[in-house]
Length: 190
Image (cartoon, rainbow, N blue to C red; front, side, top):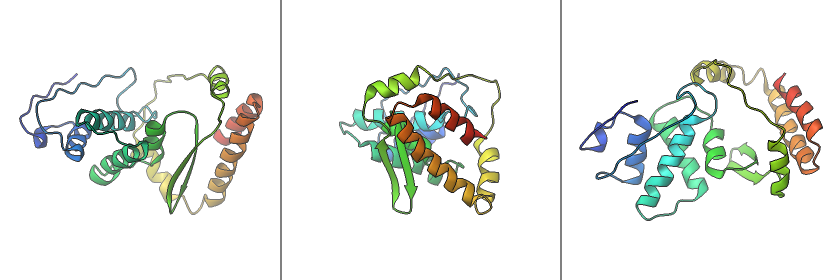
């Protein structure tokens, strides 16, 4: 737990809060509180992106503006990657900003986000079959992402296969083939 009482945005030590304030132009007379039920660093759940997207949304709303989901994702990525130089991928910011069960395609022309399924009952049925466990293991993104980046060329075929698996998985979900989807997740993990 940490409390910061400051007069100017530049004095804020929490870097995500400080940069969110700068981007939105909110400068004074506000109180910001963040809380989480997961470890704040190294959970692998996109918590920094969740905080950043949530902060941006709250601050833009405070200013009386309604940002688009894409704007929130792009601004959050800019904060984490460009301004704070964190080794993050773009997927977390888009997943948080768009919400729901989506199929994302990453290319030179940007990020395309489409609902993976159109029937909300399908997402509910999938959710009933998923479990999340805390293993007690945390890791910093840089330790995971740096070796991945270094191996992109060597793993290009494997990465293509993973993209194909995502498309196949989307079709499995649309068809309600949850057991097959589970097997595909296991294969993708391996």
